[in-house]
Length: 244
Image 1: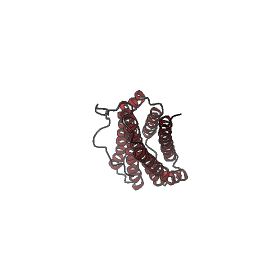
Image 2: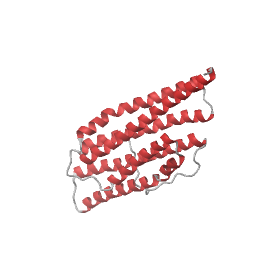
Image 3: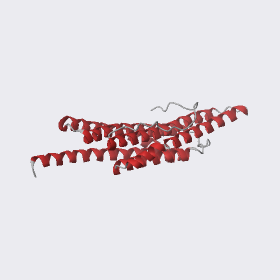
């Protein structure tokens, strides 16, 4: 093996290690989100506490990816495709870290909701959570296989998550309005409804970040960003800040 061959092989190994870190982080983000949804549905405070405790693992994973990418950029000075790939992995890690934040946020709200077990979870949440999880899983699959068509499919389905989030928010608001109209004023109902509204927004934002990842994958593979306007669903007037 020539010195040049050795250098190329070493560089490929570094890129493979970087990819593995991103895949591991994606697996952790998916695990955290799935566990957060399950904890919410079961009002399981022990599971919620574990999710919150594991959030720093995602932060550390992002830092390691950033550090590895900076090291590659400084020592290898990659060009064209390799540069896009390294840059894109850092952006993907950033989206995965935010998804982890939303999982933690849902877990924190579960701790409050668990105090009011008689107040039911909105029926729309199951479908919304399933779509958000599926988008994350599929976009990371497209990263693994470098499948631009699968990434584009995730990108185009984002509006479905928007629609489901909007439907859940409308249902929660309608439930609150009905209670007020009937002369009721249950403080626990109002508190829980507020948390459900934010959880809907958290899950919508998960879909947004899965779509961001899909755009990055398209950039990595093609060298250009998607110029088409991102399809959006939902209705104005129900947008809330997701929060950390």
